[in-house]
Amino acid sequence: MQIKPDHFLLICETCEGDIRAEAMHQALAQKLPADFEIRRVNCMAGCERPTTVGFQAEGKAQYLFGDILSDQDVEALVEFAGQYRDTEDGWTNATQRPRALYDKTLARLPRIPQEDSL
Image (cartoon, rainbow, N blue to C red):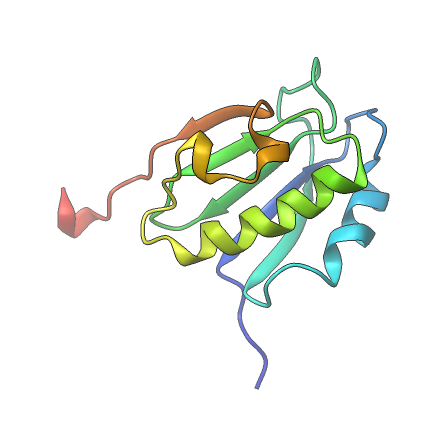
């Protein structure tokens, strides 16, 4: 039985950083948890800090990371994907995230509450 993804890792296609979207996709494709889908998207407005990557899931906080420059950063994204998946609301503090992402967080947006919890 195939797992339907309910978590999404977004890669900016327009970033011109050290790791381009196609290479990033290939580096992450076999390493992410099975319930993640990679989506390549147009500009996420992290142009000053390429390459930008986002995390989304319904009912969870959303994240945007920039300055993804190395294999170490890619491995940190994989580690964070597991952390993110395992949280109920997606919320993590900077000190809980992989060290390589500590100063690469561009944004954390709070989750949108479900209608029944408003």
